[in-house]
Length: 119
Image (cartoon, rainbow, N blue to C red; front, top):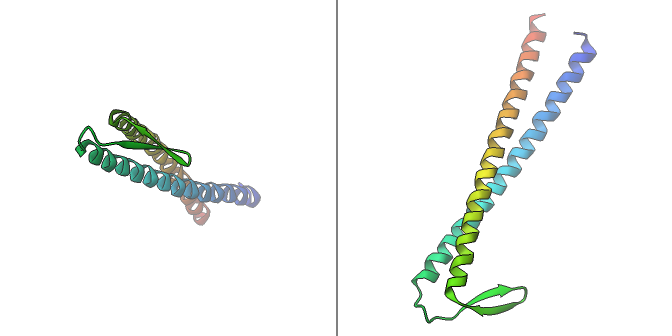
């Protein structure tokens, strides 16, 4: 390979590595946010389930609160927890994919660098 081709390939790999690192950082941040959301919902659910059935519960709707049955609040929290778990699973898959792509690019970059030194 000539010098221009190698230079172009190196630049492309470096760009892919930088983009991959940015994606990995973003995915990890999203995973942490989902985990916080899930834990908060689980704690809220635990507290609401410990309340007597006759205690009034309210749901936030925009800038106001509506009084709703505890069963509705519990159902909504359980649904939100399940959604957080599903989203986390999807983000884990995305993280593994990005890590694999990043590893492949790093390996290719190392191979090219070693190949260039051998000359």
